[in-house]
Image (cartoon, rainbow, N blue to C red; front, top):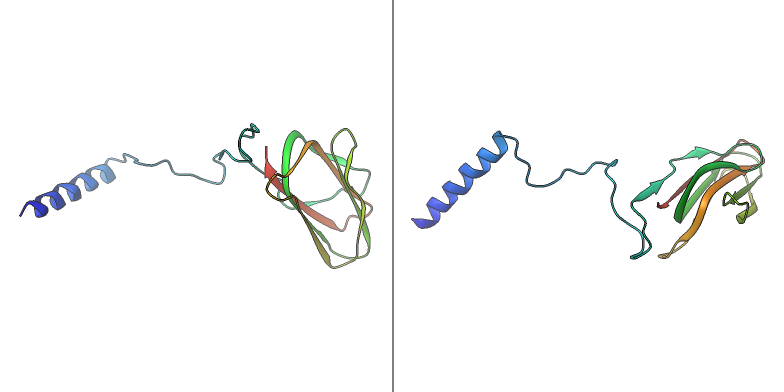
Length: 136
């Protein structure tokens, strides 16, 4: 008999909270910052550049923020292209990497990642799409 009362009380409490919109947990969306990165490095959340067509020029600034890069994905649509990714000071991380047409390349920086103070990137053709992810 006692269990039945607890069940009824719990059911009524659940309905009350649901009807009056009282949230018991925070709803996370993709825009909600999530603390991440290796412990003690001070990164506040995820970084994702989205898939971007690289400029057909000398490397152009993608971001001036400090990024802990964990993954770089590039896809060359057609023809051979040279891809260059540097920090904003011009120190090359990927320098004139040759990609043949209809190919993909993924650069993984493991658990620690690679810290870049700003990111600049470019290709010698307009055929390359890349995405960088990590922490900022």
